[in-house]
Image 1 (tube, rainbow, N blue to C red):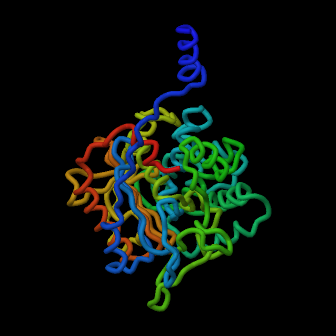
Image 2: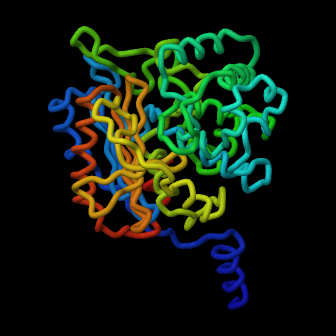
Image 3: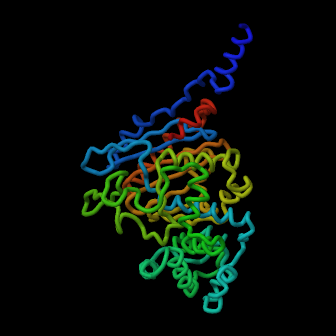
Length: 407
């Protein structure tokens, strides 16, 4: 009988894997009460933010409406557009190709596209992938001529990689600003060319690469490309802009985002929780899985290579001062004791900021579904408040990491 009891215990607690339940993981503290006043003060339809320490989301919030003039509350799992914060993803994909031996940091345009070399502007031939990522290739900032080029490229036959190849062939024949490698010039076109480089050496479109190599391994389940809402639906916070002095919502469609051809420069979207997960992974600089590249490669992406001249009229989401690395900037702010790693992103209808303090494994992400100067002022004011409140706080427990990241 005693043996039978032992067998019964073994079956119940061993063979079927029955164990005592683990304590419930801590949920992130709500930021909603901190965020709410910003809506009326800065005329924001919606606002979301999260702070991450040692990979754990300490606090997160999402307030406001998906569409101005309606009562469609946003949630922590609603998708927000992150604009040029996409550039860091493109830079990480390049780092992967470098580690795999498919590229070198000094791989030139003429090497990657030898069939174009003969017709290239001589100044374009030696331009390297590192210069494209650091905005030092001499490729100018978007202007009327470049916007026309985007439109022409989008009218070409074929898939997006073929359109980006056409874009690259046209870029290679144009004049560059003098002395590539020495001057900062923020360029979405340069990042689109970098996307074409990735497509050439990998055999896949950039759009496939970012999903397969980053979104899926990191578990960014809400991440996608293009307008954050679905065609004909208000299933995410719509982008907004001021038209005729009034806030106008933009549904998914041709004018709901920038052209897909410049995806490598800025068309990603994701929830604030997934954005925080991405920020926390970067702030750890290789401390946590998944291992997508070696830690030293992450540090290289974060390390500034060029000073950015101060530009007081820079559009929100565009670097205005500080220094720039590879898909990341470095920005001094009076509320921080030292410069933080930073990037902003906007398609004119949305705005997002990401801030990293790798020395303390700390990060902050903020997003709103309206573009413009007031939105930028709101995020800059909010991030100072978040830093003051959370930067010295310790992660509550490693157990919190799973649930705090959301489903």
